[in-house]
Image 1 (cartoon, one colour):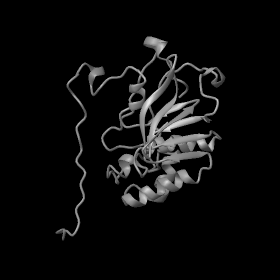
Image 2 (cartoon, one colour):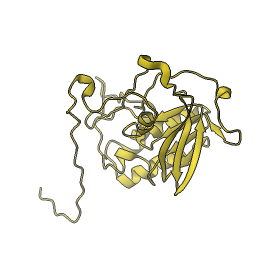
Image 3 (cartoon, one colour):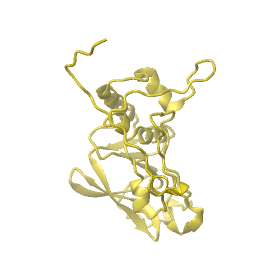
Image 4 (cartoon, helix red, strand yellow):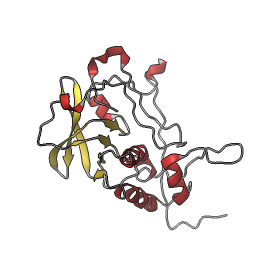
Length: 227
């Protein structure tokens, strides 16, 4: 998404990307914002700072897919993840079994980068193997700079325009600048901190007290499971 200008008022909508239940039929489920298109030369970016074509914040599967897709199209891309591994829900969250979407002839309907993942990993996979797969997928793209262990701290704004993000990287404060930014955090932290209007739970349906149920995922070992 291009640079954020909060003066657009009612024309600006914050769409939170939420996976429904356990159905992950696509990996690119990123936050979408209607943003003004300002040429990068007009922005107050310090001259000694590199400006990426795209900054993706969040190492969830959708963030990974967005970064890889951008890099394959020639964009200098920065991928920021606060944890030490990639994959989010599908690795750290323990969601290692995916419901699939098939057509009438049993053909896989979900394509693109997800199809690449499915071809190698299937719809049920080892969590550590998935971590390794996502890391390989990102590291083989020369145009992606990956920053693990890097936490979003605050947006970098000038005249209500989002220029980049301030982060804490391995305990050190740093600033990164980009022409475009995709918020792939689980709760749209960057957009919310930048002043974009948002709703919580079912507020947009008039049910302010309702939120999505929490799923418990757990693992056991050394169990003699009876058949």
